[in-house]
Image (tube, rainbow, N blue to C red; front, top):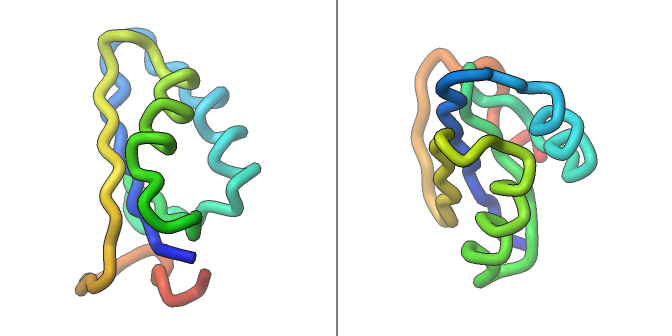
Amino acid sequence: MTKYFICYDLRNSRDYQKLYTELEKYKAIQILESLYCIKYQDDKTEELRDHFKKFIDKDDGLIIIKSAYWAGFNLDKSPNDL
């Protein structure tokens, strides 16, 4: 399993609930206000992008980042908690 960071920018209508509900299904932890971390199968970055973009509007932004290493400061939760 690999750690992936999911970051989003909901722009106009800002309907967060659909996305939050889906992130909960993946047992995502909230790292910062618009940054979550999940564990998922290796080499599935595009698969995750295609999945999570179904839960945001067409004008919103989304990025999925596969991570082997990370460093943070003053986070809400640590990716090590996964």
